[in-house]
Length: 432
Image: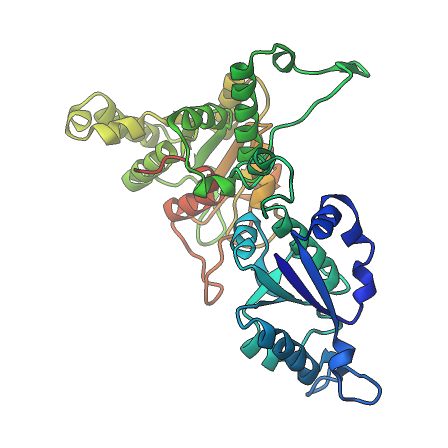
């Protein structure tokens, strides 16, 4: 594998490429790294390689001529050399991309600085733009080192034991299980007994479960491309059942169009759609808050029709969905029920179509969901009253329109979007 590095600081790489497995791989000839100082390709008598940007602005931009000459010099020797430029706009470097790059055989790495390189080089002479993360570094040199290391590990012979590479996080598709070594006990913390048992089948099963759990909690999106076995799917299902999300559909107290506090009417569509939503995403319950006795009775009769009447015989799937619905006279009664079921006070997630409050990210919601029972509080009519919102522990960001600020969604639509943003990343039930 050959790497050609275009940089104005070739000395940056002297020490890192001499240590560890990478240094040994270079010594053995498994990896070859060449450095090209861009100043050597400048025809400027001062060896300048940058200039001020057209149109004004801060910083300097790498000129096109030295870059073009350096790329051409390398391409004349090997037309198949693959040119990479490191930039924030690039494709995020991950294991899959690293595996693709390891098959190229010859990579040319452009290390930009300042405000980047002339757009004409990027647009016409670069074959791949790559970013190592959503943060800012001084230049592309550190990114080059990262790419060289992740790609080199995939070259046969660089890492002594091939199975250690294949078991690494991301290569295997899952995050790696925790590792332990001697002593057996450290400051009162003990090594898990299964690892001391000598039962390799049980150890493998234990590690697999931990890998699945870590991936599910920290990088659930990796599971989208991981081929789950039936056993792995069952393990994930058990883990996901630990998440405790409830939906509260509040009919009182809510606001009308004039901003007055009212009790809204139950609608058949809300019950059906929220029930199906809750059943699809595995929420623990859809609790309807309705103090008006006639409305509460109506809702209970609608649900009973599907659970005990002809509706269930006609549509068993709808019957299954309707099992998640329960009715309560007030918010406190419903919260108390959740607390009774879960053994601890739940956290309330407020929803509001207007940006009145500081909101938390969906990533943070998922973190909370692994530790606490959560209630997603949904308002009917024109939304939840201030009285209800003040009781909430956290708030979700409003759902914004794509082209303008219009975001007047039905509670059914809003609930579906919010629940999918929270739980959709955990979807493991793919049809084969």
